[in-house]
Length: 272
Length: 140
Image (cartoon, rainbow over all chains, first blue to last red; front, side, top):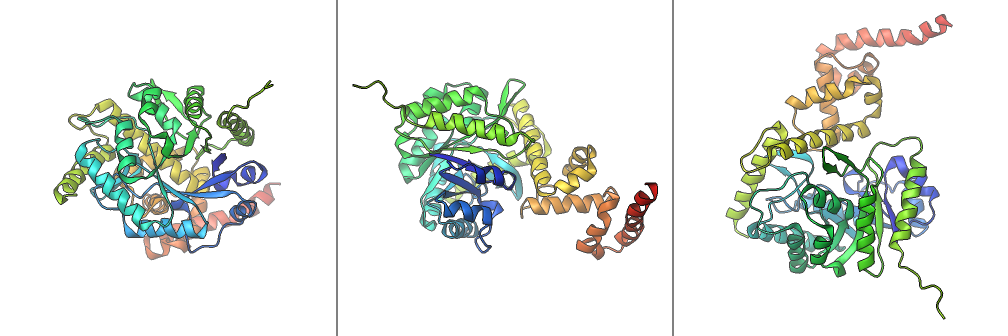
């Protein structure tokens, strides 16, 4: 399955591309009480599945997920007939301050209990299944008690939550914190994989930045290739959030073609 | 889960958030990586405002980033979302008299009218803007 994150700047390009099976809408940009935007309605009418993707539920935060945020996600899921809501394993606010982006939680047994409880509360409130996504980080907390893959796996096994694997984030962390993506994948319960994210980024001063504003780097595609080789079929979604040059349609179409090829199971040939 | 564990996590995350917001170091963390993260958070914040208000960005041109960084030094991200951040930035530009001339009128009719200090700027700049088309025609 092939998908793309719906953004107003990409509406025409998405409309023209007829082989998209699903799109994500950003929960923070939509209202459950507003009319469905015509370009999205058209996609829904032609059978494109919708996933509601949130960034501010704060599942890795110290407070339990807010009822308003959960009601918002639920309202959107109902309005857009979404079969899934996805969120990040991250915190975005603390001490009255907002980060504006996703920050990692320290991976301790005590914090694991908090995250598990937050996710169980969210699952209880949502009428559709929840998937959680690994995030890209440029720094690590001191005194982490477990690696990221173990932390994620524990959460999945304790809550039954589905997994949204971002291969660009996995590559970013593998590069920035020096581990092998294959070791990470070995520990993940891939049977709980709902779908995959892939996005572009850049190298800067030996660190990889997951910008969502640049083209996809080859090593990221290699991680995607490896994930796809480990599962029967993959649903892969491309994300592009900024820098929209004039030739963007060509660039994104090219990337979608590559992703489609990688995510389709290899066919038997020359049989018989 | 015990309230103690949540309180401990809250304190820990608040401390980190403060350091990232102020771009300062924190014991136990790699200082360079925290700095890179602080810069990256600011860039993300700038990109978000760029998406919300492209007109402001194109009007300010190359000075947009510098002005936003100046604004961000004294203004935290508001809790009610990026649109509020954008509005605060516009208010900051108006207060510091750096709002582009062509935007004063719109600013005045949206929120600026609440502050009598902005009335003068609105009258002054909307006159100069309203004269522009005539000037262009005359130039031809």
